[in-house]
Amino acid sequence: MRPDPIKRIDTAFFWDACEQGKFVVQKCEPCNTLWHPPRPMCPKCHSVEKTHQKLSGKGVIMSWVRQVRPASYGFENSPFVILVELNEGLRIVSNLISDSAPVIGDTVEVDFEKTVGGKSVPIFKRVVD
Amino acid sequence: MISSFQKACIVGIGQTEFSKASGRSEQQLAAEAILAACNDAGIDPASIDGMTTFSLDHSDEVDVMRSLGCEEIKYTTRLPQGGAASVSTIVHAKNAVESGICDTFLIFRAMNERSQYRFGQPHHSMSPDAHSSTFMEWCFPFGAQTPASWEALSCGPYLHKYGVTSEDLGRIAVTFRKAASTNPNAWFYEKPITIEDHQNSRWIVEPTLRLLDCCQESDGGVAIIITRADKAKDCKQTPVQILGAEYSMLFNHEIISDFYQGDLIRTENSEIVADRLAAAAGIAPKDTDVAMIYDNFTPQVLRQLEGFKYCGIGEANDYIKDGNLELDGKTPLSPNGGLMGEGYIHGMNNITEGVRQMRGTAANQIRNAKTAMLASGVAGAIIGV
Image (cartoon, rainbow over all chains, first blue to last red; front, top):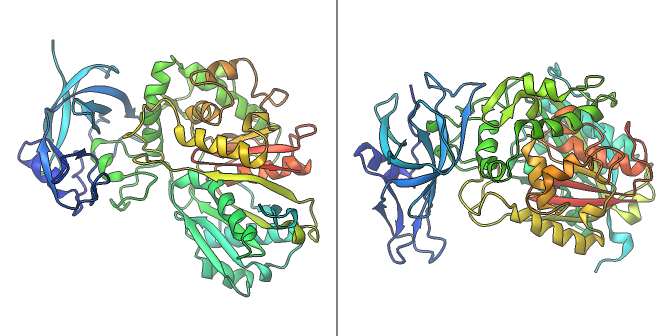
């Protein structure tokens, strides 16, 4: 089964939100800039005061791969890995849950999937027109 | 501006055999390669007074001193960023000797990445903390767990935009293996491949990388000795000058997992390095006689040909189709067979090959080669005689 996320002090908020079914990114408190992946300091205004913001969860597939050999560790079948450009302009690596291969340019929407230790990670599904 | 006698020169190169099972420790491989480089240069290992290697290397500096009998080390540094560090070592070596901090500077890299651990396999024991080559936290739980998967994900937008096919990538692999087939030091000596072989090789990462698009995990060690021109004249070999060595890491970019910034089409850091190199060396990378371009995976060659300005953006595939990378072409590519054909010592064996080409002693010697470009993505160097 899918490995658990690797939490760190500066990133725990992201994974904790996933467990509550919320897809968030880091938001700088003073300057409101969004960042992903998270980081201890805002590179724009240098504040360490951080909060987070819920995203639309919608985006477009920029790139995809599937690890064939070796197969993805922990998974029953290697998943489709996608790079998503989110509507908010940030990018995230995730999975497309689908029977058919991803297509660059396809619109996707976030959902969540459980990991081996009962944690949760964001995954994406195609938006059906 | 420093005077000519202060300029950095490569005076010694050394390497072990490249294999799948060295049968000895990484520390011994390092020591053997270093001794070979010192002997090549005609210097006493005791005189080494500075050194660098990769942050990923397992041989400790003090341990190196203990084996080689180095009397005093005045400066050491370790370089992050995986194989992109390979040519960065030249930047540090040049600065160390031209500044006068060091007289005899050592670069080394040794690994049993096939027999002792598998460099290309999922790194599930790796620390989640950033180590700039890859930020595992954002890839691992999604099943992107190998260098091949990160590379393919990063190259996807480029390959898609310009319609680069698996056969196109195969042409690059065939080029490397052709050169390796006539290099007795290459793991794939006398083993050329065809496009059909490439197309029949199994998928490593869909939809991009087949087995023959990938370099091979190898055991081995490589070492290089750098000093200043005034000292180089007393060494055994013709000094190979470092005409320029430059490095650029840009905001919010990563090395192999470079997903978060830019259009993933252009490699702006390489473009910056190309411009700085041309200014420093007085010759552009595209006008040099040999191109040693880091080839962990075939798509890297396309992106670096464009990044280092051998051709325009989106033109690399045609540049290769036109035969420019053949050993008798305009841009002879890695005459040793590259990391795919000769062995993957994290890029360092491409540097020693560049030096041999300048000395005129390579297995596949490019005629009248006077300058060579050494490229590893974020770093580039031009060497010459």
